[in-house]
Amino acid sequence: MNERREIKINVPVLARVEGEGALDLHIRDGRIENLKFHIGEPPRLFEKFLEGREAFEVPDMVARICGICPVAYQMSAVQALESLFGWQPTPWIEAMRRVMYCGEWISSHSLHIHLLAAPDFFGFTSAPEMARDYPDEVRRGLRLQSLGNELIRLFGARSVHPVGVRVGGFHAAPPKERVKTLLDRLRAALPDAESLVAWTASVDVPQDREDFVSVALRHSSEYPLYSGRIVSDTGLDSPVERYEDHFKEHQEAHSTALYSLLEGRPYLVGPLARLNLNWDRLPEPVRTTLAKAGIPFPSRNVFHSMLARAVEIHLAIAEAIRLLENFEPEAPFVAGEHRAGTGFGCTEAPRGLLWHRYDVGEDGKILKARIVPPTSQNQARIAENLHRSIEAFGLDRSDDELRLHGEKVIRNYDPCISCATHFLKLKVIRE
Amino acid sequence: MTPVRVLGLGSPFGDDRAGWIAVESLLRSEAFRALPEGLASAEVCDPVGNNLLDAMRGASLAILIDAAQSEAAPGTIRRLDAERIENGYEPYSSHGFGLSATLALGRALNDLPPNVIIFLIEIPATAEFEPADGPSAPVAEAMPGLIAAVLSDIRRWAKSGRSITA
Image (cartoon, rainbow over all chains, first blue to last red; front, side, top):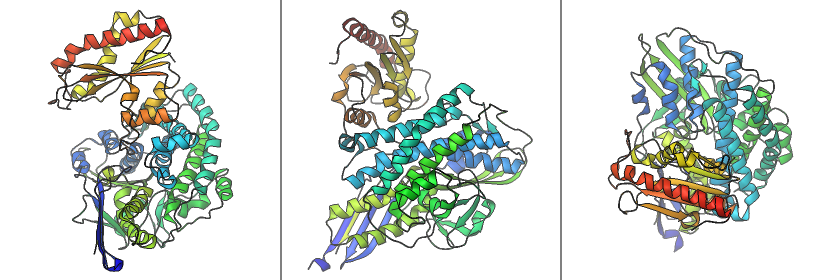
């Protein structure tokens, strides 16, 4: 009898996910007949706003795309414009950009682990509720997030929509005294990061094993953040400027975010994809901490994304310490002539690959911009993951169980739907 | 870090600046400047969430000022204890961690000052959140009364050194 029931589940508002998302699930005769992950945010048209603007305005404008990963947008943008203009930022500028970017990873990842994802795995509906039973863990999350915010402020004057970045470098170098204070805080945070890795490895996550394609940057010596070539575990190895040869975006009627496919297949970007492709680039002591956690990488369990975020927090703290240890202020920016043409930039935002392309005219103004954010790249992967994971979970479960499981799968990607358009509504139909 | 901290909440847009304007007016006022040195500070706060918990940490009295829309008459000032608006079930996300969720989180972690008072200024229902030269007339007219009420709370706290929550 049950087998023949038609079940329709609709999750109209997805909690602890940024932006307006929804999930429709239609089950007929014990099979998923239709599953749609909707992104319903109105398009934001940022690429159009950029047309006709001066190149120097771009870093401040793209920072407004996202309140949680503005640094990523700024970094991909300045990289694209500098490569076009032929400006070569000094090693100091590149190192300080990496430090600022580490701040964003620390802040964004610790927020996601402690306030957005963890309540799912401990049976709570919200972080304030979880905080009553797990105060030390939630406090640790807030401490780490504050530290990340402070690193962003060091270069950007404020943690949300920072204003310190310019094409060519930074408007100003931070004062030595502030760097020293922050360095002490970073060193003091290492035990927090180590315990966080062990804690996330011990969380009882669903044991899903899946076949999926990981895509991330890869650098000759570093764990990728600010630069590298685009690689996949299916053999892709492409310079940033050839992205469009391999990745195609298309529109689907139920979503205002574009879908992106690699050679026709969905793919994963973000912390798990990065770690799967770059675990051998982890420096000490991060590598040892991960080895102690006992979960081998590459991992085929997408729920290991939370552990990957913890590993990247540890990495970002260790990197920021390394890069700030012998800090001396230097010339904060380079400058030169503008040049017409096309420039490409790609960096690793907390949620994954963030690719920018700018066409600049003879007058130095933006003719055309193309921005491919991580969440739209993950969109097809999320839908594929939902399908498999909900089937493995069991379609005979109650609507509430199915809804919660679907939400867990989606939240695990930490999707930033506002960025992608350019929250979850679940509708289940059972027949 | 001062024991009394006044934090203006809001955004740069229209009457949503009310909390920021209050802080600016307070900092300009003779009465605030005349308070004993090291007693009180006032600042415009980064968006709520973790930044607000950081800004309040270690204070004995935190006074938050924010704009509100509740169908009351525009310009109405309300003074509430934080507990009245805490809500651990308010939806939140990476980008939107609202005031009531922030206060609930701080309370659950025993991370709030012993006294947290919120002043809410009612802004017109028709308020438009666009860049503007100044606040709407009801908000501007309510400002002196609001500043006086904030100062009176600070003085009362300084005198008694005890709880002054509503």
